[in-house]
Image (cartoon, rainbow, N blue to C red; front, side, top):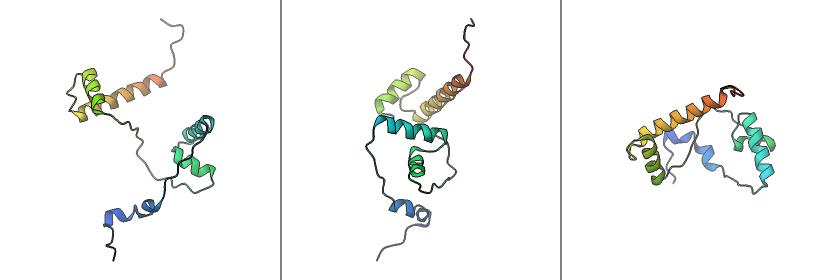
Length: 115
């Protein structure tokens, strides 16, 4: 007899039954799907569902970026920001600030021909 899932996991049960499928496609197909997803503010996976005519559950999601950082990356970032490489939270805060600064610089009009 199966034991019931904990209450906090029950809402995720349908996702546990889903199977992730990967498709080997050309670079042009990949870029087309990514571009369409970006323009529609969708994930790549949701854009594939749109192309296939499947439903897309538009759940409220926290906008976030992810990156995998190795121990060596933390050492390099610690050196860059003059922080202890083991202080992952402080490094995360500095990386977040760098991303915000990057985004602000991207949204500024170019100062063409001005000195």
